[in-house]
Every structure is written in structure tokens, then in C-alpha cells.
Length: 414
Image (cartoon, rainbow, N blue to C red; front, side, top):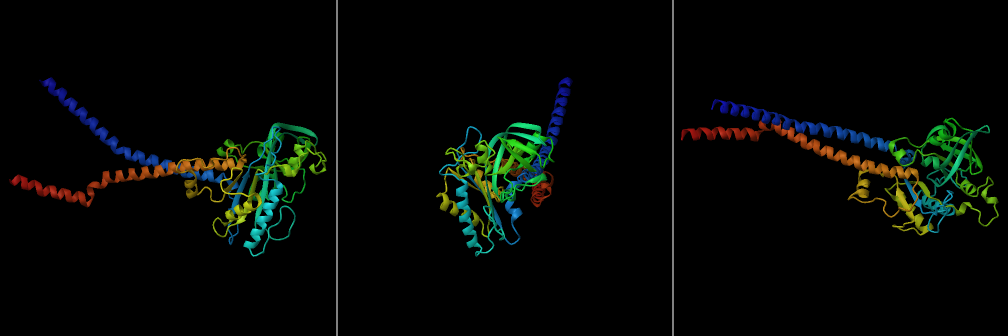
């Protein structure tokens, strides 16, 4: 009997210890959740800011605008016919070409002049003007070729394949590069045989970024390096191909490369020679004044309708509103409820900076969800902690204790 009593007492003590330790552990769970939620919230805020800082090409409007005038950055992506030999894609009847871009430029010029009362016309990217620039635009297309680097006739390196971007207009204004050396191509054309390398291509060909004046041979044409730019170096840049070897040349040179000669394309008499007008413009970008929210977007849509017969929902043309694209409201409309924000454009070539921006949107949406969840958990855990340690001191708890004290004596008297 005595042994059974001891065993029973032992079991009761152990069960009491377990209950007590469990009680302490349960009391600590809200603290653990609160600390974890706080850490996740801070991490998500840091990560969102890192992603936003890596999207320099999406903030041209904020950098260009003056204190008295707002601007909006817009991108037009166009369908094109890809070439198996890696040369620049050819234009389609529904897509953009250099000639159509000229017409679009003229249409926008009329709209912008009317919006500003005919004052302050932009500097003409397709000619020359001494008037003050009120808006900027540029266009580009892409080809893929091998490249050979040389200094003073001595070969220094080669690439079996690199991306060659033909540009025209104020490309450097809309794409605020970080320059490692030199500068960018002239908006008016300048030296046709100048080339700008990104850091990856400069390193692969020359093992240096200070290579201004060096030569790069591409498909029989020799170009002189006038600058080296850094386009991005974060995880998103690496994932989306921003850090791939890339070079920039004048748009007209894409036709020259497609013909496989260093002779300018306008000297060809053959019927099958590639001309500038036969090349597709894969991306057209513009900075427009936006005194009323989204009026610039409406102006561009109107000009596109006039030049191309564009209408909303077209599968051959996609207009992207870059300015403010990372705001919470725009991301909510674009991605919620769960959907593909860019459905219907799978066959369209997307430039590297747009691929980077789209992945950045997904990163921001993910970390924003983490931030919201961490805030909710932190609030719930905080309320639980407050109730646990301060609930007994509330007026309601004190009133309950007083009521109990009044009831107990009455029961004892009976």
C-alpha cells in the first residue's frame, strides 16, 4: 500500500512538472511568433527596397521631370519575324519599323505641341533642332553575333555569341546607365562605327573596363569602343540575362551586319539586301509630359491608333506603363486574384530590362505578401501577450473578482 502511494505521488508530481513546463512553453509561443514576425517583416521591407533599387531603367520619368512638370515613361513592344542566322528580326505588317516609328514620332510631336500651346518642341532625334526638349523617345532591336576584341591589331579575346542592340534616339536618357568608362552613343547618330559594351562583354573581350578606343569586330564590321556600361548586378539581373554579354550600336548598323559587310546598307543594289526599313523595331520607348495622371498614356494610344490602327487587346503590340508600375495598387490589379499579368504575349520578344522588371514585380508581390502576413501575426501575437499578462488587471476582471467575493459569503451564511 505504501509503495502504491509513493508511486501515485511520484506520478502526480511528474504530471505537475509536465503541466507546468508545458504552461511556460505555451506562454512563450506568442513571444516566438512575435519575434519571428518582426524579423520577417524587417527582412521583407529590406528585400523590397533592394529589388526596387535594382530597377534603375524604370525610373527615367522621375529623373527627367522638372519640379513643375510630371513625366510618364512608356514602352511599346512589337511583334517581329525572328531570323535563324541571329540577325536582327524583320518587320511585320502589324508591327513597328523605323519608318512607322518616324510617323509615330511625328504624330506625338503634334500632340505634344498642342498640349504645350506650340511652345518648347523637343529636340528631334531624327534630325536636328535647337529648341528645348519637352519629351524624349528612342527605339531598338536586337541581333546575336560572335565578336572579337583587339587592341592595336592584337586580338585580346572573343565570344561565340553576344547580344547586339541597335539603338536610335535618346536611348541613354531613358536608360540611365552606370558608366565604367567613356560615354554612350550620340542621339543624332554620330560615328556609325562606335560601340558601347556592357561590363560582361568588356571583361570577356579585354579583361578590363577601361577599354575606350579598343576595337570590336562583329560579322566583318569593325567598331571602336566609346564606352562601357553596367546594366545591373543583382540576383534578378543574373536570372533574367541582364548580365549577359551585350553591346550597343547605331540602329542602322543592324542592316549592315545582316548583309555581312562593312559597306553601309544604302549602297546595296541587290533586291534581297537587308535595308533599315525592313528591320523590325522590337521596342519603342518614350518620355511624355503627364500633367494629368495617365494623359501621356492616352496620347500614345491615340498616336498608335493613328499610325498602326492600334486598339486595346492587340496581340502584335503591347504598351507598358513603366512609371509607378511597382505601386501596391497597380500590382494588386495586375496579379490579384491570381492570374498571368502578361497573358497573350508569349510569342513577343521581350528586352532584358523588361524581363528584369517583370521578375521584380513577382518578387515584390511575394515579399509584400510576407510583409502583410508578418504584420497580421505580430498583431495577433501582441494581443495574446497583452491579454495573458494584463488581462487580470482590466476593469472587467476586477468587477468579476468583486462579484465572486459577494457571492461566497452569502453561500457560507446559508
